[in-house]
Length: 312
Image 1 (spheres, one colour):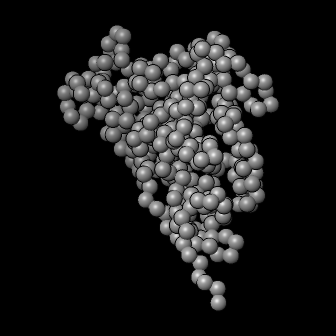
Image 2 (spheres, one colour; image 1 turned 135 degrees about the vertical axis):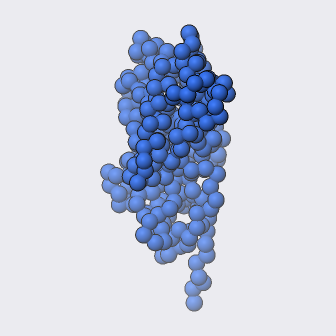
Image 3 (spheres, rainbow, N blue to C red; image 1 turned 90 degrees about the vertical axis):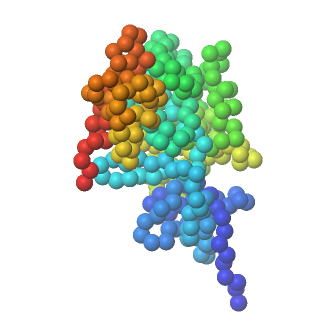
């Protein structure tokens, strides 16, 4: 008589719908299914799973250190857990959106996560210089902003120069689990492929295993950076879809360092920084030079209005 299967621990490294790929401590990868109609697991979850023939079922999601998710007017989408930092990849071309960048920074701040901002395509001369200048307010907020020139593997590499932060970025990824975000065309895939040459192969394997076809390329995926499995990258799409409806409007200013730095001078403790007399934020915006850029203050106002809309 065969012994009953025992529950084992594993790491969720990819998923599609109710199916996830779980990696065991030995490196074996197993397709697992959620119990019930809806999967509650995300990439980065530590789970207990039970073998069923050549596949398995998720029995329990172990406690998370953090959870990154997006929430718009319609739904909430969780996509990564147990991460140490967020890496936001932008480029000199195509032009990046301060609004998208700010949304990602706010979501990371809500989970108390460090952020690295990577500005790619430093070889584009004046375009890069203009983009670097646009990021001055973020450097003033003490965000780490790094310059790189990641190219697709089919293109000849660009020689590193004194102002290239590629080696520094690699060092900052060591020993950590990093969630990598960025708009299409910024070079996120080139960054991942530089240090995970087998990334495309792994994605194809996941696609076949989960029978997800082309949809798997738009799913969140875990990649190990080293053989010792101390460092990892989580590739996640949907940068433009960062809904923040899980954040209360009155908490918004606390999650924006340039706004929060001036809020201590407000006359009222519950100041919205929009119209109140004696508002330290509005006074700072009127100063010359202002510690809050007009672009950032407009983002704050627009987001406050968006998050204040009645929710059904």
